[in-house]
Structure formats: structure tokens, C-alpha cells
Image 1: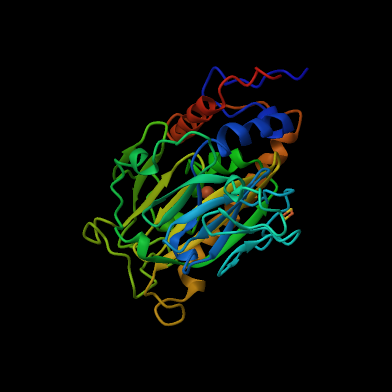
Image 2 (image 1 turned 90 degrees about the vertical axis):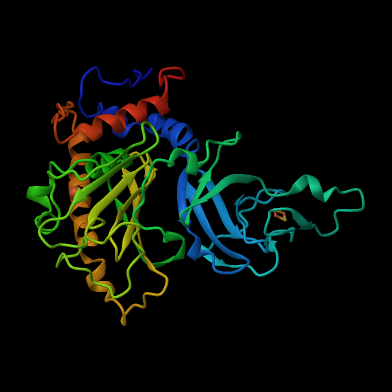
Length: 373
Ligand code: FES
Ligand SMILES: [Fe+2]
């Protein structure tokens, strides 16, 4: 029997098995990814009735679909007849019904069964709608929750966040960059939550923002953490030049020179870094104990036109460069923790405080991991 993986007694990284064990990984899927709100997209990705986007994590495969009433529904992508996957494309538009390719059962955009060929008069269609997950839209961001019980609304959890850009619901997705990295998803978070590594690994980034600065933020307890890192000198954005690289900016709720921070907030599964010209949304999707898909979604104001108002190569360049640098660090840590010689070392008690908080939330969500060992 494998030993239970338990919280360490002191402030330090996780034990080796937490990064390698398939059984532990499965528990993480169930207790975290299937049981907490997950960022699944932005409203601009659903422009018309029937626009859909898939959201997959672990064994779960959801289809987010814009219905005629404007709602975005999260439907399980599994036919209620004999279980075929309904849609295999990542995104698309289905103007009328979602029709299963196997025997032709057809579903409305709200998941209700619309038709089932030759099932007879006694067949009750109302019993065979697609299963649904919870959805909520906060500031243009679409979240899904797979739990059976109605979860605490996102807007309640984030009530204290003073978000500097009021109009993210009128943003659009300008570009999505994805990376499949040979690392555990928690190593991505452990990397994202500290800037102890920034001076020697992100020389371009630390020319723009003050890694030791603190311009406020909010402490959302177990739900989220929100930082405002001040920018250096006359920098206004997280770009290589430090300057705004778009002519069209988000509406700031505070004056630009007060809003010129490196706004960063996290839940356990989602991270957003915001500047007046670009908001980058990051997710870390677990694929295997040693494999993670990292997605960077770049949002710009809906009126901003690529090539006219901004050059995508310039606007997103520093975000992507820092991501590539972090990907190498995360890959290196996975190699290290795989080595039997690995033992967790102590956190830095100034620069790695948020890592401790992350692990606190992590263990609360995981609960007692020994129950089925
Ligand atoms: S499995 Fe979908 S219609 Fe038969
Ligand atoms: Fe980094």
C-alpha cells in the first residue's frame, strides 16, 4: 500500500509523490478540478446563437453553448443514448441542433432532447436531456463548476476584488497561446506565485515591474489572492518597452497612473495579469502527473484592431517570453522531483509566502488523502 501523502509540518515544497503519483493525481482531479469553479473561456468566444467551445479536464468533456436566450450553457459532451461524444471540434457553431453522429439523436442548445429517430410513441424525450454543469459569468469570464450542489457564486467569492478595468465583458480574445509542458500542474502554480526567481530568470520582466513593491491588493482567504505590483519608472504596461503598445485601452476605474500596476490575481485554478492595453488569462490544465497544458489567452478591448491599433507581436511578446522562461523552470523542477534524491526544501519566508497559502488551500480542498490509500 502506498503511503498517504500528507501536508508537511513546515513551510516547504510538497513531497515527491505529490508530483508523481497517478492515484494522487486522480484525487486532485476529483477534489479540485471537478469540485471548484474553473475558468472556461470569455463571452466573446460565443458570438452567436449556437457558438460552442469545449472545456475538457481529466475525463470530463463539456460543451459550452450559446443558446437563443443568450445564456451560455455547459452541457456534458456525451449522448444520452449510448454515450457517443457529440462534438469533437474544439470550437464551432451549431446553428440549430446538436445532432449525435451515431444514431441521430438531436439536442437543443439548452441540452433538452429535441428528437430521437424511431424511438416510438411511449418514449419520453424529457427524460433524456444532456447532463449539465453550473456556469457563471463574471466580468466577461465564463466559469464552470462540475459539482452536483449549487456552488457559492463566483461573484460572491470575488466581492472584495477592486478590479481596475470595468469593461472586460466588452473585451475580445485576440490570441491564444498554448504550451504542453512536462511538469506537474502544481509546479506551475508554485512558480507563478513567487518572484524569488524573477531577477535571474526574467531579466526583461524585472525591467518593467518592481518585484519587491506592493501597491495593495486583496486577500480573499481560500478563494483567491489579488496583488497589485507597481510598475517601475514610467512603465505603464507589461510589455518589453514598458509602454502601452495599443491605441485602444480598457476603461480604467482609477486614473491611469494609479492603475498602472501589474494586476495579478489567482484562484486555485486561474490567473489573470492585467494592464490597460492587454489582459492575459492563464490556466494550468492537468493532463498527467508530469504533464500540463498551459493556456495564455490575451484579451484586448473589443474595438482594438490588430495591425491598426496594436501589433500582436509586440503587445503579447513579454508575456510569452516570460511564459517560455517559466516553462523551462517548471520542466527542470519536474525532472528534479522525479529524482529519488529529491527532498522538499524550505520556503523563503519573505518571497514565498503565497506558496504557503496556496498549499493551505490545496490541502483544504484535498482533505484527508489517506482515506482510500
Ligand atoms: S449514441 Fe448518440 S444517438 Fe446513439
Ligand atoms: Fe516566472
